[in-house]
Image (cartoon, rainbow, N blue to C red; front, side):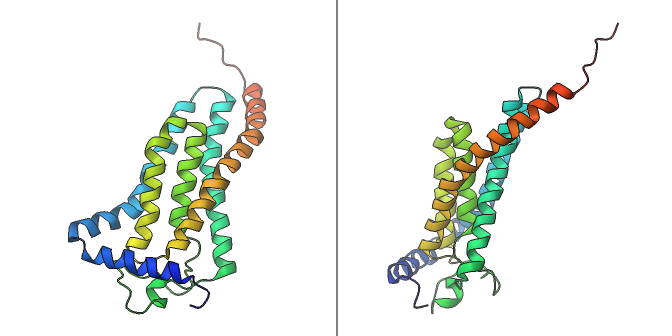
Length: 198
């Protein structure tokens, strides 16, 4: 625990202490929302695909690149977890107020996958569909905060995960669009054209 910043431990205790004092319905809502928010982002990915149907290769490339960028951010987060191997605060901090089950040993804490996925989803979607930023970035912040609220991450875990998703996902989405658009354009051109029925 010596490698964990004292300020992060103090903030963790403060947030989890506050969480323990909230009404039961608040804790239940946060526990539902910490994963439920991912379904909201998934719905926006599906909307992107729906908007891209029978349209240009650029639209289809965008619809594919955005979720792929999120997956890329997640994989980077997983690699960092294996390198750092930071123990979860729900085991490492004595007397921690944990509102949900503590992940098993070996499910490392730094960075937060939930925060990475939430920020990556919001940032990648905002990159290609700017109007969504107003709704999805605050949702990503709430999801990141929920991980500390529930007691399964330190604040620096969620901050690192959030920044990771926020920075890398738009870059990966841009790269994905650049790579996929010419491939899809060639695929569209190679498709046999159907003649109208006589």
